[in-house]
Each structure stands twice: as structure tokens, then as C-alpha cells.
Length: 202
Image (tube, one colour):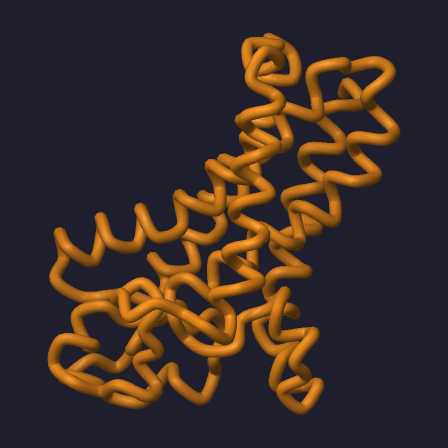
């Protein structure tokens, strides 16, 4: 198995494991302000996009450093993979929940896994094809914008539904836009709108 593929597989496992732990880290640290910048501080869709963006950013540093000599197009590919995977999380959630009319726990987990796998698959493919190298500066700029938005909107979020925390707003409208609630054992058997699995509340 080629080195790039090994790194991609390792990256998938790293992001899934680290993202799962990161979901609880803000609470474990007593709601530490600094930790909250990089991990979810509430159950909104936006906050849970951090579960892919920051773990992949961390893994990308050694991956880029170690492989750039052999794969000169890896940097732009990592930017693209990170952005695509992060944005795929809400896209998948809204797509399936709109079709089914509800959120389902297993599908929420699947959406996170699919987004992570997609992020590294795209990184792998574009690293080999080098099609994104001319857009490296643009992709870097978009990645920085995403980073700054995560920093600013963590504690100063706009009044948009993607930023809404359903734990604070239980209105009928909020129920249509639940947030990811990945691996919350205490929620599994709590009924909500006649559902045994309230889901991964995006």
C-alpha cells in the first residue's frame, strides 16, 4: 500500500476518534473558553462542524510536512478536503432529514463518517492528480476564513438556524433544525416527538 494511502486511512481514523472525544472536551474542561474555540460549545450544526475541521487540520500538519517532498500537490488537496468534508456535514444532515422528515441517530453517525472519509478521499485523489495546485492560494484563503469564522462565531453567533442551539430553544421551528448529538448515551432512549432515538442533533 502506498504511503499516501496509508496516511489517508490513518487520517480518517484519527479524525473520527479525535472528533468523538472533542465532542465532550468543552464540558470536561469546565467550559473552558479557549477549548470552546476548537470544540463544540453547544448542539448547533455549526459547532459540530468543528469535529471534522480541527482534527483534520491537526492531522494535516504532519501529513503535509512528511509527504510534501514526494507529493508536491498535497497542500492544496488537504485544504480542499478539509473544506469539502466540513461543509458536507450539514449538507448530508439537511438532505436526509428533509427527505425523511426527522433525524435518525444511525444516519447522523453515518453522515459524520461519510464526511470524514470523503475529506480524505478527495485529498488522496487531488494529491495524485494535482488539479488543485493552481488554486492553492484561494483554498488557503477559504480555510483561513473558515478558521476565523469558527473563532468569532463560537461566542458571537449570528441569528441563523445553523447556529441555533436546540438545547436552549425548544420551539417548534427549532425541532425542525436539530443539532448533532453524537454519542450521547443518555439521549438514546429519551422520547422526543414519539421517537426513541432523538438523534445526533445537528
